[in-house]
Length: 109
Image (cartoon, rainbow, N blue to C red):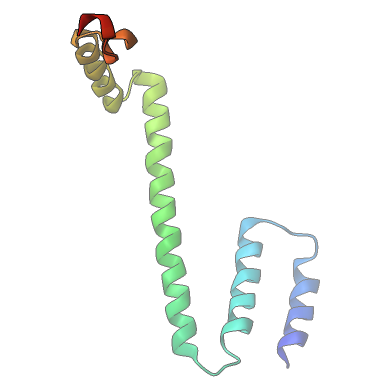
């Protein structure tokens, strides 16, 4: 059976399905088809491993952001936001400078 015959058989099998699992299988078929004709299966395996590592890192980061979002909703401010308030207090204590202070008055020389 050729790869195209296998694709046709698979197309008949999946029908109108478009769920995540079906899309992933199609992606795997495509990557296999694009990666192996050169005869370098090690390169293909390395590519897939790299993509899986990136996908895992993205999943972990998304999970962290989702948790932060939920925590912010239920607990209020994030810890980083409290540091912003400290900076505002310092700014309020700073000396106020007017634009006129930046220029030298010729008459006062």
